[in-house]
Length: 230
Image (cartoon, rainbow, N blue to C red):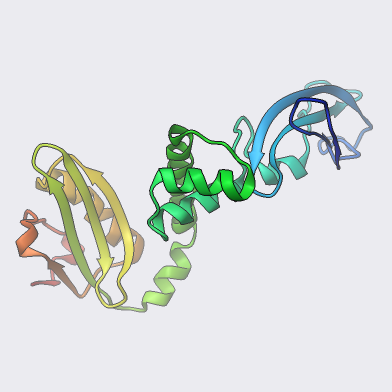
């Protein structure tokens, strides 16, 4: 349950009350435990102050404290940026290739949302974290879509002394299967990512590497060594 009020000179306050009516452990009655307040920002509502009313079991205080699921669907606990804001910023940065300053100006102009470039960087990092979690959760569906065979294309982009990015792709579809930051193109840094790829998506029918990128030769796990290397 959510209810909005406005306070002079401040962001609107929105009340969220835990929706549960019975204790999930013993099915006993609940009572109000306490209320807590935190500031947050969502793309839909802009900045606001969430006032959440928590509940607990009336007969056994060791049972879990219950919060508002409506609030949890908007913003992760102990965070301030809403999921919709994370997706908006992440898409603008990585799909539309906008710079942080462009995103910052657009959010203020269109939504009245003020964020520092540091906050935008943090939201971008969270977007990538959530995207990786979703990618891993969908591995069974992705593996099914790949079929029984796929060519593994490996590519590393490194600046001397600065590390870089190593990518394992399905060469036919251009899908990124696994990617990770690496300190160098040494085999010891590449091998774990190749092994993770074959563990998640099965053995490739071939491995392809960009010779111009000087990717160090990487030994595949024994089960995948029969694949040819181009």
